[in-house]
Structure formats: C-alpha cells, structure tokens
Image 1 (spheres, one colour):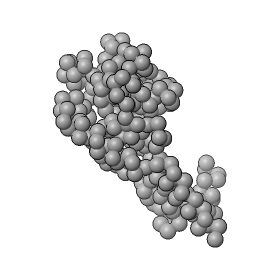
Image 2: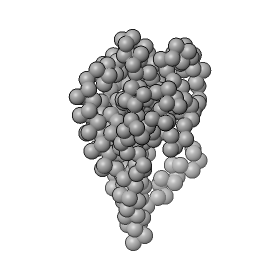
Image 3: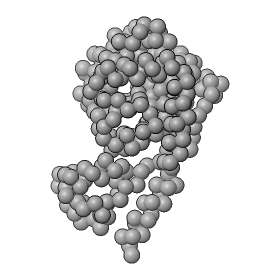
Image 4: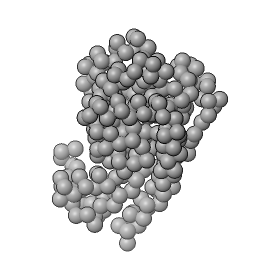
Length: 245
C-alpha cells in the first residue's frame, strides 16, 4: 500500500470513490484535484427487501428470535466498528426492554477483540446478547429483515453497506453521524458514536415508539431506492468512457 497507492493515484486519469466523504479525504490527504475524482455510490442487492413474520419464521426460530423483537448489529468485531458503545448503552436500557428486545451480533472476529469479547461474554451468558458470528448471505437477509432496528455506530466507513441493506428491507437504522454514513443512512437516526446517552435514547425510542419506528421504516425503504447496482455500473462505465476518449 505504501509503495504503490499514492503513485497510482497520481498516475490515474480519473479516480472513482464510493462516497463524497472518501473523495474529500483523497483531496485533503493527497492533494488530488476535485475534477479528477468521481463519486459513484454502491448499490444494494435486489434480494434485500421487506419480509413479514411468516417469511422470516424458519430462520428466526432457529436462533430463538421473534420477528420485529430484537436489535441487530452487523460487522466484523474490531475497534473501528465501535461495538463497545452499543453494549454499554444496551445494558442501561430498562430490564423489560432488554427482555423483549435482545441484541443480536453478526460478524466474524477481527483485530484486537479480547477486550470486546470480555464485555460480550456475560451478556451472552445471561441471554441478553445473541452472538451469531459469521452468517451466510441468504440467512443474513432474513435476520436483517426481521429486526426492530439495525445499530451501526461505526467510527469510520468508506461507504456502509449494512445500513443500506437494512433500509432496503424497511428496517430503521441507528448509525453514526461520522465518515460516509450520513450519506447512506440519512433517513435513519444519526447518533454521536462517542456519546453513550445518544445511543441509549435512540434504542429506547426505537423500542417504545411504534408509530415513529414505522415512519422511519417507510422513509428508509424510500431512501434505499436511490442506490442500485445498475446505476453504479452505468456511472462507472461513464467514467471509463471519459478516460478512453
């Protein structure tokens, strides 16, 4: 990376980034002019769509979960994903809320996980947290579509596919107000990823306010429709054509 990345940037006729945030970083860190960088957002796979309780039942029963009655966090277990703040906020929710809405964690182990695993273990033992680890793609869709909300407090993302996939399923997102996430998850609840209180408030409102949660669900679905792979491919092709002229 150190040897080839920056020289590659400087040799390129055009550069594609998947978010305006990353474009800004390339400009700020490497001094690349704005007109050389094209933002082409990613898309969401068509099978990420809303499912009802009948459609999710088989998968959810396998994990002892109920449709619309769990919070979901998706991502590799590593410091960048900022899962610790979700755990600290979750344990401060009212007991009845935690009883009704367990926290489900999906994702492989990443780097520097020992401290995080120490936080997770007692919550798993008590049944408040369900740690599913790596989940096959087809099952992931069902687990996302059956959630009450996706919690995604990641400190740094270049794009943020899980929030987009959740919104395509009509699932509201609680996500960080940092890096690229506001570009993707603007229809969700944007929280300060360093403020426990804002996470607690968002989780409580998501659990208790059904009309608000349903309104966010509709807005999220609508927002996701602006992101699709056909448009991503067409915009990428346009950049390639401009270079080849």
